[in-house]
Image 1 (cartoon, rainbow, N blue to C red):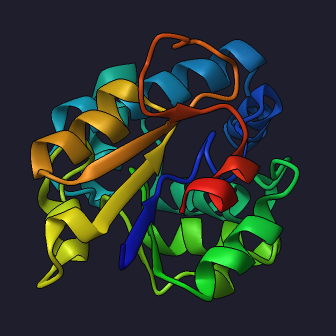
Image 2: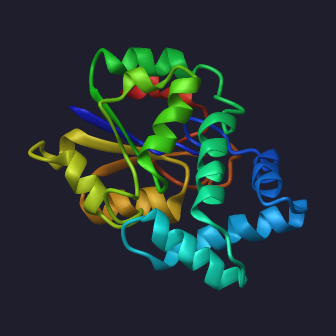
Length: 206
């Protein structure tokens, strides 16, 4: 093994519903308004190629029949960068410190690279990773482009993906021809063969 690719949300850092209030406060709306904006961004991810701020803003405005400005969108990105740092699973730093000494570590994420790097910096995880590869660089997972970029000249059998989403993280890895481990914190896939339920288990198997 030479390289390990990590997903970010719900793998290294857990998503929390209170993040939706950041959306609500930026647009001066209710929680429901924030949720609509959050879902609109999800639609963009499902329909797009490489992320682009102007195109995402245009998509949101058309989807929600609104007229948000780039200034407002930049405030939203800033809020995500600095506020979405709620919870890092117990043992994550210990595991990354262990793996960092043995392998090259990367993050492959379906969001803007700089924004995700800032979040990791806030919780003192950024230093472990060679590169944060976001959807502003390659098409979002499960598209294989990001996986293949990180793999580079390394033999595919020496690369592994760690992620929480079977349909995105794991499918993308399988399609790219690299190994994967599902991190199943909530025990949703008890019959899945290659899975763990605690990030600390990586120290035993890698």
